[in-house]
Length: 156
Picture 1 (cartoon, one colour):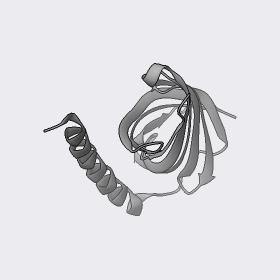
Picture 2 (cartoon, helix red, strand yellow):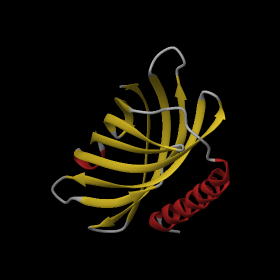
Picture 3 (cartoon, rainbow, N blue to C red):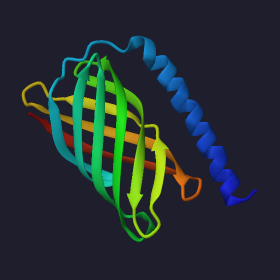
Picture 4 (cartoon, rainbow, N blue to C red):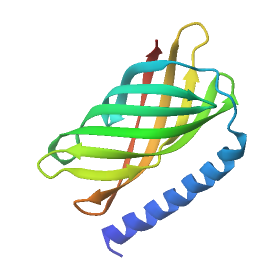
């Protein structure tokens, strides 16, 4: 079996798990105590500046501007719409959907499905997060990738 076929089968399995997680999380999405805007750092693939803004009802928009180390280096941007639910206060799990752009000689555009956990500190306006995001590039060609990282944000 070729490398591309194996990679495609692995991504299919990851996608099935993510869709199942989204279906399980959807009924339990509840009110979120957080509000405002968080700004911090994400380390991983990609590594850069992370921002989140809370929309209410456990919904948030997550943005990252980063440097991607794959493919000889490039500038990376993503935006995700996330659904959060508490696992055990103050920890919440999230799943979402978003898009990404990789700016280099041959720019790439695609979509991603992030899942992860966020831990909000009680004493400080700060959180820590961990995420993994299977992704599919659509332009200039179709390819599968896996993004992820950990980070922290301060709230204003």
